[in-house]
Figure 1: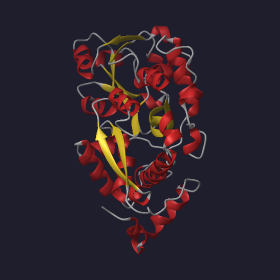
Figure 2: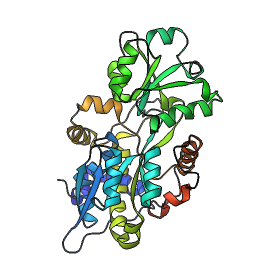
Figure 3: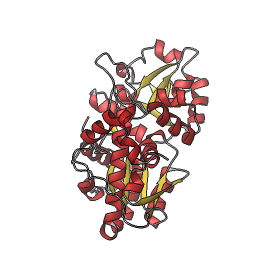
Amino acid sequence: MRRWIRAVLPDRWLEFIQVLVLCCGALPLAAPAGELQPLRIGVTRDASVAPVLIAIDAGYFQLAGLDPKLLPLESDATVSAAVASGKVDIGIAALSAPFFRDAAAQRLKIIASRSSDRTGFPMYALLVSPKARAAGLSGVRGLPNATIGVARADSSEYYGLYSIAARFNLDANSIKTILLKSPAGELSALSRGEIDAAVLPYATALALANKGRSLLRLSDFAQWQQGVIFVTAGNIAKRRALIEAFMRAYQHGTADYALNFLNYDDGGDFIPGAHYDGYLGLVARWLKISPDTLARTKTYNDRRANLDVADIEKQVQFWKDRDKLSKTVLPDDLLDLSFVGEESAAP
């Protein structure tokens, strides 16, 4: 494991200075006094956990006085349950109608960003059949009257699909979605010609975009807050120092991630950071995928872990309008913005 002292060796002076600039405004790291404090982090195996892996590898958690343990869990719902029950201290999961319901019921507080679906860094895409593409499903104007398969009607990607309709003033009721329970179910229906397109994780859609099938990346048309960091209100009250220490390390991890994965020149060509190859291999091994696949499907993580608060408010209202969330739930009750240093990171 690399130690922070290595970051100031001559071959890393430039990156060291960049990290200081990117982290300006974030809480500084401080050397721990005495024994490291255990920290349990509940996650799913998602590429957007990369900044946490980087922060662990770079020693940022240790310098914040923490001994982090990643606990991969089966689903976002199990992460929420683990945080609510106290089995983990920090949760990292995707937003969805069930997440908002759990957060309201269990007094969970969103404190920082995990990931956003942004142009150039898609997390979901429509895999379009050749017949549907020929009939005009090659952009947003083809969505009305299209039949689209979805795994869940209460998910982040479902919200993203209908965000496109709202942004382009399309009649949302003209988009017909069919619940198919899983990506496998979507693909079967697409193969049988029962749907025009399937909403799939981008990596899955990219691998299957052949034999005349084409892709429409949702983030080319709408962008949204996809995943978040969250804790219980009780932990904020009783263990605020622990959460602040986590955020110090995490924000250094997001800054490192931005330096190595998110830089492009004016021509749109990717500029890998000094530790791109090492970090790419680190995250790929944890995800159990090839580095090449990860390179083509990397996610967007805000460099300071700031939240798109305006979009979270839209998501809460979206689920209320569809009777999947109580009308009494207020976005402000789900947020604690005191840990990130800025209120939001709007697109």
